[in-house]
Length: 279
Image (cartoon, rainbow, N blue to C red; front, top):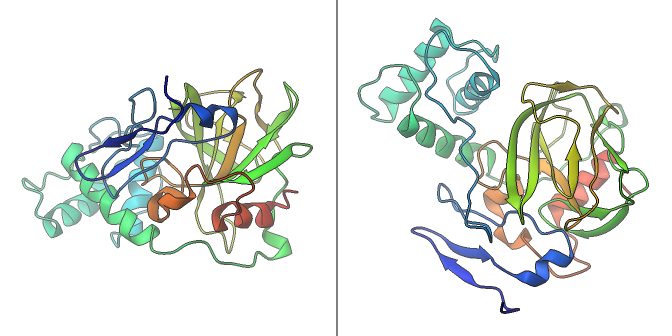
């Protein structure tokens, strides 16, 4: 197998990820255009967070994420996790505004793609820039880890079995079983997004053994969410996104953050370290 990285040409975005040398350190699912998946070495792409048709009467974490996305793009609805009349009405208004006919109020593939694209334009407008207050800080999720370079998040490693914690109370909203090199990604949403944070989501990926893969599970601040696995490419942790293919906030606007040189520092990684006192 060649040691050079191969660029795979996709329909809208060309990029990524077949570099064997990346297996020596944390890498990540690299990366994305507005609505075009970039494929990993194994040729798989993360699915949209809406993996079923959503309609009135249904409930679940994906319904809650739908409601959050609707609110982000200007169709305000309470994020209850239940698809009621208010949610159906918000979906219909979105469909009519975006010429998605028939405007049934149900969310299939076309509506989901259009909604996530619209949310991406809103949430991916700028890189993180903030100064967290002491009252908004959570806990260091990876105490005792050896901190590596910045990537789309923070790369780190530790002894096998070392615990990884929720930096703040959070809900597990999606699990990608093969995010990078056969390793998983866990996407969490903060129960109460902290003031000043650039995203209501955070992610943990790669060399991990999750405590659970059951979406909807709520973890309190400082509660163990995973442990360091026996083998892999190290871990990556940082700001997440429900609207980027990589499920990282960096994946929305900053492809250059993917797989940077050793010793790199990125705004994405440094801001996450600053917010949660990772040293």
